[in-house]
Image (tube, rainbow, N blue to C red):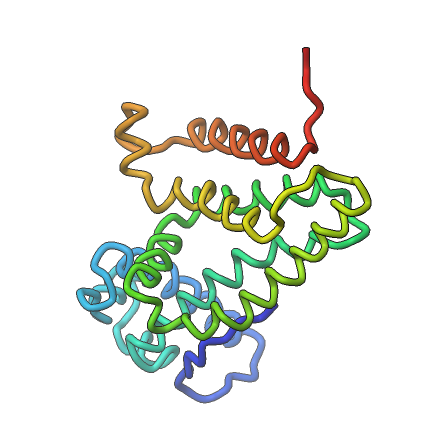
Length: 223
């Protein structure tokens, strides 16, 4: 699924392969830097100058590739949602329910560990009423959940997994996985850590996987 929030990139199309690679690399740097700055300062407090400094690129590059702060913010949100939804492609009627759900959870947990700032930017957008992504949530995201929930309902009807509310299963997975990014400070404090380590994320991942699979009747009970 390719999600677009009409970021409106500026500049002419670059046809040469080498220039295209440079552009792609710069865009990745800018988006990663924007995630960090937007997560820390919010949209209102973030500046293109701060993002350029975080990316170690000239401020002019940001305007060249994305045009404005608003367009860059939309691009960050679109990239985050697209990356979150990509793992759902494995949830198909012919897939093994346990493998598909487990891989989805592990992919979401990996994103929380690797790109926590992206999750925080998205969470902050929602807390402010989702002014940029609200329409998207009620269209593309809603349609995706309906399609994948229908797959899960099919698995349930075929007795391939226990009866669960297929729509709310997604809400549960989102909440359980994204909390390790959005509320990492809280989790770290309770665990007595300055910050979450790879070992902490591995432990959390196994917990969430086990909890969800057991609730779905996809995990064999051990004596």
